[in-house]
Figure 1 (tube, rainbow, N blue to C red):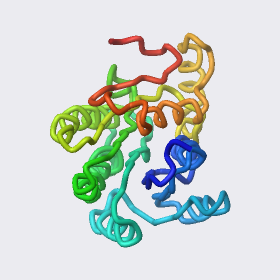
Figure 2 (cartoon, rainbow, N blue to C red; figure 1 turned 30 degrees about the vertical axis):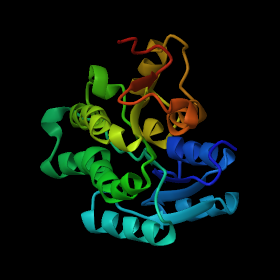
Figure 3 (cartoon, rainbow, N blue to C red; figure 1 turned 180 degrees about the vertical axis):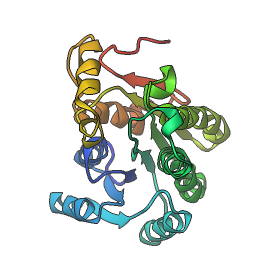
Figure 4 (spheres, one colour; figure 1 turned 120 degrees about the vertical axis):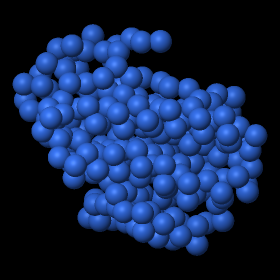
Amino acid sequence: MQLKGKVAVVTGAASGIGKACALNLASKGATVVVLDIDRAGGEAMLAHGEAFEYVHVDLSDLASIQESARIILANHDHVDIIVNVAGWDRIQPFVENTPEFMDKVLAINLTGPLRLTRELLPSMIKANYGKIVNVSSDAGRVGSMGETVYAAAKGGLMAFTKSLAREVARYRINVNCVCPGPTDTPLFHAQPEKLKDALIRAIPFRRLAAPEETADAIAFFAGPECDYVTGQIMSVSGGLTMAG
């Protein structure tokens, strides 16, 4: 129960990697605030026990982000852990991306996490403690055909991780990033079958990651074992991207 007494906020926690992360952190003793646009999925998490709270958020809407942060900080003096998991994309050539599509991808994958972190960070600074884990993607490290805006957003999230880590280290706040490769999530299964098959064949382990495997990496960065680790990027991709 190494996270007993800690308050963790996890976005996208109604399904996929976010859900696995929320369950993992709760199993270690944390109180987990589930942030998700999916009300039914978010409220369903409450059935897993008293460790869970649900707060609705639309990461593409600043007012919604501010209201969710207000609710969280009204219920808790401060937040100990922020995990920015929520993401969204659709495979298509860049020349087919409409301005509305690009705005949505950037809002959910980059602007939303930045804005939410900005709202909750002062409580961490006041407490002189915190762990922030951003979930990016290896698409942001090496590029991904048909995901140009998504890759740009995820690359920005990695740069945000490193820059924020430098700013807040003086407050004992660690900021790190996990980059999943292809993972068995609803987002992956929404992609074309031909692309899914090609990705699985390209992975040295010849299989998708389970959400729980990425959740284990997130839990490392969120826990006390990570107290002297900050500004780092960890790929969980089955060897698909072996870049330094």
